[in-house]
Image (cartoon, rainbow, N blue to C red; front, side, top):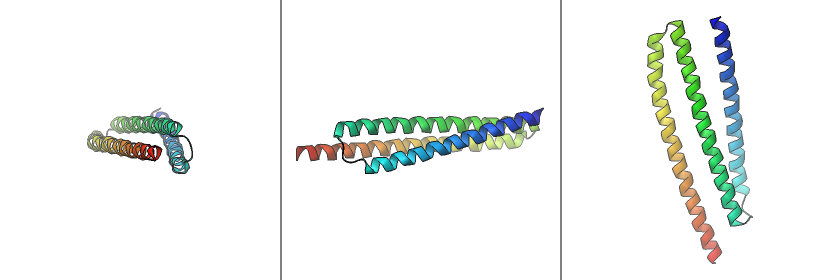
Length: 129
């Protein structure tokens, strides 16, 4: 009975990991697209960048939530098996990882904001010329 639940959880984890990989690939494609996207009007360019930025944030949040769920499932599974000590240690490690991920995401968002501001300044400069 427990094994069947474990298998189901593992399958869910695999599906989530596949979704994550697809999202990361999609993100990379968008970033490449952004590099080649130079010849359109500045307003549409800004709108597209904003949309991309929002999508990236949503994806990061979704990934973070999935990772948390996955970690919780692993913890529950270990506790069911009686590895209480190991589950506690892992919980601490996971909390540290989560904090680090959130910090990295924040730094990445700040970097994106800086880049966007630089692009806007550059566009305004070009429009003036």
